[in-house]
Image (cartoon, rainbow, N blue to C red; front, side):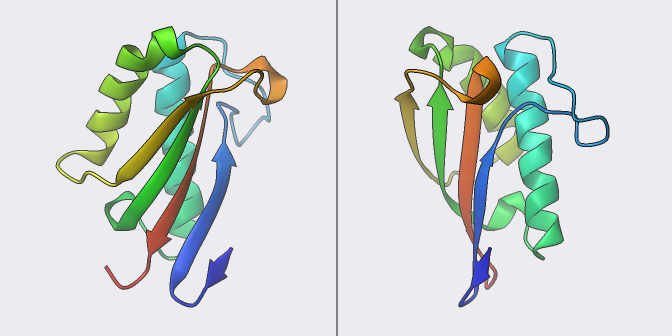
Length: 107
């Protein structure tokens, strides 16, 4: 959703966009695919991860935060958007991680 120069990307889960299949892997692999999916959604709207100003990370288990954070940080590099991370009671399709984002098209 693009509104007033802002991109609001819905939560992404570790689903292969070509096949629709869930990724069978640990939290690191799941986070990597979620970030790739998020980047693809942003690109469709004319934005990139560098323009993200806020994310929300939903984890099925807060004990996986460190592994998720390593992969998340690698995708964002030196860019550090504001972030909230919460443990969810359940996530769609019983995945381990879901991430949504807000990006500003102006920078």
